[in-house]
Structure formats: C-alpha cells, structure tokens
Length: 131
Image (cartoon, rainbow, N blue to C red; front, side, top):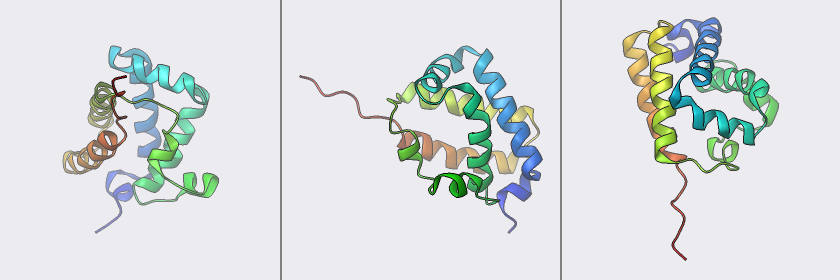
C-alpha cells in the first residue's frame, strides 16, 4: 500500500491541510485554548512550518521534522504544556473539519483521525493530584 502522504495527494495537500487547520484554529472558538498553548511555546509563526514538517514524516513522506530536531516524539514536543481532554477533543474536531474542507478522501480521513485520536488522548496531562 502507498504511504498515506501519497494517498492524500502529497506535500501540497499536507501544506493545504496545515494552513487551513491553523486558519480554523485562529478563527473558531474551539481554537482559543490551542492558540493560547502555542503562545506558551514558540508562537504562531513557528507552528505552521513545524506542523507541515511533522505531518510529512508522520504520513510516511520526507521526515523534515526528524531531520531538523532528531526525533518525532509527540510527548517530548508537548512536554511543556498541560493538555486537557477538552483541548484534545477541540484539536481533533478542528483537524477533522480541516481534512473534510481540504478534500482529504473519506477513507484516508477516517484512518488518519483514528491515529490522531490515539495520539491526542495520549498527550492529555494527568489531572492535578489533590493536596
């Protein structure tokens, strides 16, 4: 079977998806908390190219993120953040919409979303323990 990146239309489709996703993050209420998280990190100018770099490798294409950072460990990438279950669900909802609106074929979208769901839920931080 062809790599996912080829099945969805190559790097051009990944760039379109990332840009549309962040346009939605910047404009939808579900994006507010995600925007705030990015401001705790490297900011917004950093996020679009890094997401593109990451997703190309994640989808089986060129591993730009790995080449630049030496890893693709999601937990390490997000270690500085507290991610709530609601944040993960918001991210997933916006990504699902972005894929639908940029023409990712339904079978591939479903496969990607199943993988993204596992990854997003894995990143949810533990609830603070009671004192």
